Structures are given as C-alpha cells and as structure tokens.
Length: 239
Image (cartoon, rainbow, N blue to C red; front, side, top):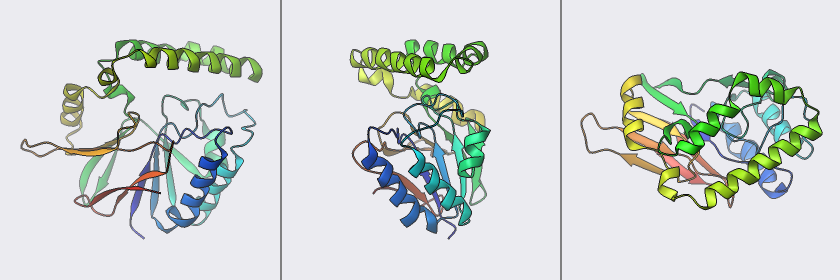
C-alpha cells in the first residue's frame, strides 16, 4: 500500500467520455490500492474557473472523491490547461494543490515534480504566451467575465495554439536539456518526474552523479501512469 502513482496530461473533456470512464476505472481498480496519487497537470482539457458547472466531468470528480475518502492522498499540480483550478474544486474532489516545481522525498532522497512546460525554453513563443496567461491581471480580468464569454476565449486560444503547434518543429516543443540539467542541479535532485511533452520515457544520463528524468504519458489512446514503490524501481505502464 506504500506505492505512489503519477499521472498527467489526461486532458479530460466531455467530448471524450470513454477516457473519463477509463479514468474512473483507474481510480477504482488501481489507484485505490495506492498510498498516494500525484496528478502533474493538464488533468482536464481546460478549466474556466471553479464556478464552471463542468458538465460531463462529474464522474471523474466523483471518482477522485471516492479515492480520497478511501484513504489515498491525492496531490494536484497545475498544468498549462487547468491552472485556474482552485480550492473549491480541490475541496470537492479531495485533493491538495501543490506548487510547480514541488519536492518530495522517496527512500530519503529528494525527487522533483514538475508539469514540464517550463522546461521547454527553446519554444520562446510558448514561453511568452505562458507568461501572458499566467499574469495576475490577465487572470483577474478573465475570471470576472461571464462563463459563456470565458468559454469562447478558451476555445479561441486553443485553436490558436493548435495552429501554432502544427507548424512548429517538434523538437522545439520538447524539453531543453540544458534547462533540465540546470533545474536538477538547482534543486539538488537525481530524479525528475514531469509530463507535458506527451513523450513517455525514462531517460538516464551516463554522467556522475547519474540523473534520471521520467516523462509521463498522455491519455489520448489509453491510460498512462508511473508506479514508484522505490526510487530504483520506476515502472511506466499503460492502462
């Protein structure tokens, strides 16, 4: 029961009810046997604010509530799609919001958790966009608008993002290795876990000290999660 699970990039949306049901099964059949679950961003496709009625997403929220009630500790980190999730939804679902980056300890060793988008520093256009939408003034203006207007703005931003992504070199949208090295040195860690890039893998350097970067997978075709019973035994699995 001491195993820890890590997921990210589910992008849950009413338009994909089969993935919502897959997540419900994951909670009931797998996560319910775990000590903790870490959701490292982009849990939902977009979030307009905690006053959103979230039509179609209730089964996922209910599954988290059941999971928390059963004793699994749930931690949520904002991603680039759901950074407006706040305390109201956290209380409803039973999770704790954690900062990005976030340090935990496994086997008495520090492990760094991130969503991963801030590691993609070669994608300068995205970094500028991120700075704009995370600005306090932008957020305050956005959440005071009617839900219908917020939904239209979010739809427009998503379409612009998809168009920009379609013409970018895929390598630009991956992490910048120098940034990864700098961040891991800054926090004094030899293990980093993140999502965002949708390129699940376990990368281990040949340097000393040996450093490992685990990239979580997305939930577009199937479920993807990391089990960490001990720091030397990471398992990336599909569900």
